[in-house]
Length: 123
Image 1 (tube, helix red, strand yellow):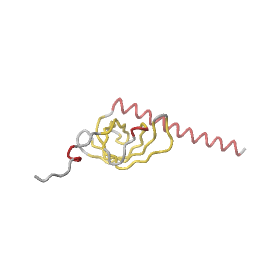
Image 2: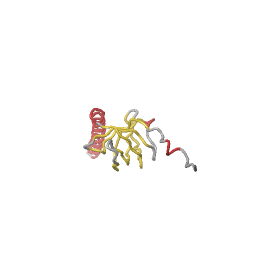
Image 3: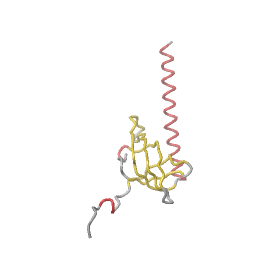
Image 4: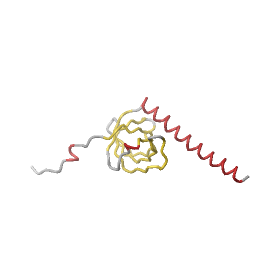
């Protein structure tokens, strides 16, 4: 009897995780349809062990630059391709929903800013 109840509990927990993944995939579709483009600097990241195909769940703390040039600090849980997980300090192009800034999709890394990469010169 204990084994059966344990299996039911494990099955219940796995269904909750699958529901969360399904919700993340539905959010991605919504962002692609109705999202605005912007940029974000990755302040902190945490990569979860579980993979979904070629994508992995990643928790990000971001400094998001909105389309009106204002900045917002936000937290996001996103699905990202394993080969394109950004590092801390990198600037990425994103799509986001204005009504919920914590739902984002990373489109790619932003090219390095000229002024950030060149050393200070004395004229």
